[in-house]
Length: 128
Image 1 (tube, rainbow, N blue to C red):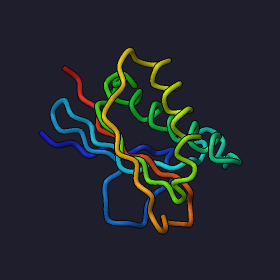
Image 2: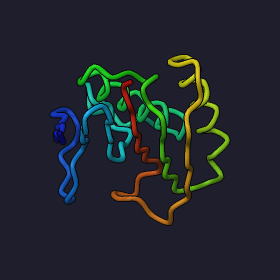
Image 3: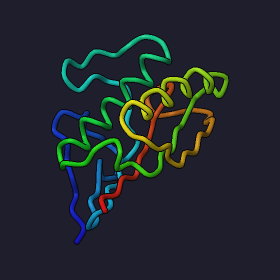
Image 4: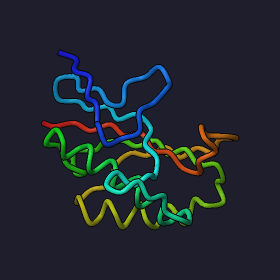
């Protein structure tokens, strides 16, 4: 059974996609950005933005009783691949803190992201 998940705190998209989809025990999370879901603050600097995106994904997972440890794959879109080492350190620390395993990851440099943002992360989580 496919279920569309809508996170009220997340900015409503004008695009034609679902924020998240739950398909039985697999959770697909569309690309998330760095706006703080609690107070709408936009952090400064790629490290803080990356950390905020990961916190946003964790927040969304909690809404349906999933956890960071349930993530099996992420896709990271970066406007500037020169930031890869910086985001990778935050990423590694975040996942080591929240799970015992690393997951699969793709990191891509893109020419432009919507609203000229610097980082966007998609995730796939599974509950066994």
